Length: 166
Image 1 (cartoon, one colour):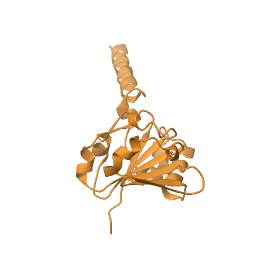
Image 2 (tube, one colour):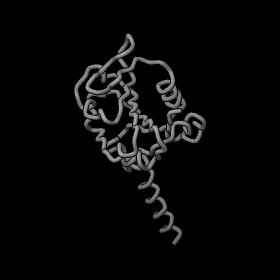
Image 3 (cartoon, helix red, strand yellow):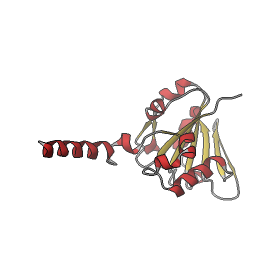
Image 4 (cartoon, one colour):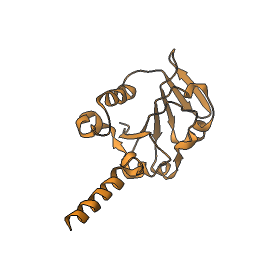
């Protein structure tokens, strides 16, 4: 009987924590949790990845800003960051050479209704280097609502932060 129980536990662990399981692979993490306690995520991220995420979010890097049918690039080198408001999602599906080196895509969400949309990461083919998506909510949002916002994330890691205006 112990052998059967061990096999069942082993199978459950394999299912729950395998890369094929989208929940285990694409868990949405509050950015502050990662930055304040990177050791808690050592099985998900290396120290270098945690430092890269912190740098991409908080340091100045070449950036492309996407807004209202306008795409503006700042910096001398290829942008490694992109920022846009959820209402401009269709502009992400266009081909633009400024998207090629983007590692971090920041999506600014100003109202809860914007979380009802679905962002299919498979359509973001112009973002060849995309590794991270940061959701910046201007209201109290949660990881479940953000998880439901995406489909086909594969190896893209998603973080969120609540940035309420003062």
